[in-house]
Amino acid sequence: MQTIQSSYRGLSLLMDLNWDRVLYVGVIALALGAGAFIGSL
Image 1 (cartoon, rainbow, N blue to C red):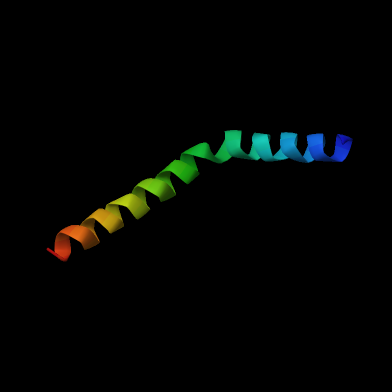
Image 2: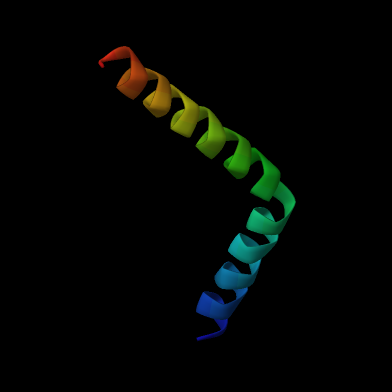
């Protein structure tokens, strides 16, 4: 149980430090998808 808790805490810390990068990649993917959709019309 302690191993699961410590790995969850480590993953949570990693997400806290890198949430802006995840958001950046998500926005880029959304923009590419929207551009492909508009281009196909």
